[in-house]
Length: 329
Ligand code: SIN
Image (cartoon, rainbow, N blue to C red; front, side):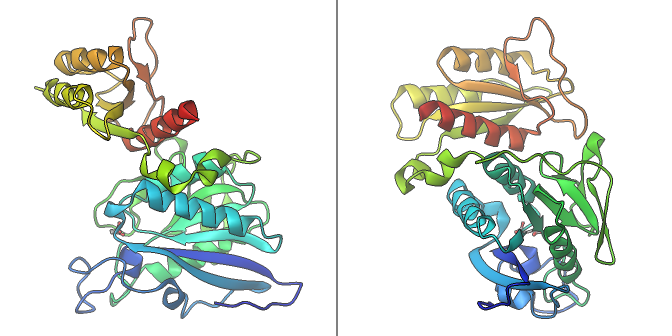
């Protein structure tokens, strides 16, 4: 942590949340048998020199395996980003994160903050203890993006590629270049500390969605429950009906939204669709998102269930949660 600096220096704040990038294994040759979220973010910056004119500030916000990410950590992270981005001398924020739900956190932060400065998530596919870890180079590249004065919005930097939060998806279980941006393609590349941009940065919006940032802890704990169910060959409506029964019985945290991970152009198995229509009639917000990794759902005149356009099911779930929170306020 650095807390004093000359007036000509700008700060890049690196927020740690855990992940493989902070993972530890018993031996350097082990790239899969590690425990995620072990090494502190200040230590991750250990061998990394700040680029000319920049000072790095490290802050640990969470320390977890990102499969266990939840709404409460997202809100805490969004608040820390908002705090630091409001400081005049902060050029941008980098977030070290696990790869498994990185696209969800990136989408949440873009939806809530839509910042006019860069927020750059980065990660690693190999633990910090690996013989050849990918984390340090990814962090260096992310810092280069965060220090780029024209940059804005939430992006992901991995293996030298810059992805928009709106388009990024984890597409590989093992390879270091584990992310892709589908039809949209990457925002650009980082090459030896220089950003080569191919298309616009994610959009910024003054004020973002400040209601979430101001929500009290009780409201966060009561974040609307939105389930995801996949349509597939032989699907049924049984789980939807059980969730509706639970709702009707007055359970403490009833399903308020349902995302259907639909086939192709948003089609849903007839049995699951019938149950989803029952859920919609009962007041559940239902959204169809495609299982396909590229493309968007093109609407048809006879659609009875809304579609999520190009959003993946996990991003559609976040969009629906935020919509429900907006309606409740
Ligand atoms: C995680 O997502 O926290 C573990 C897996 C990874 O970072 O690659």
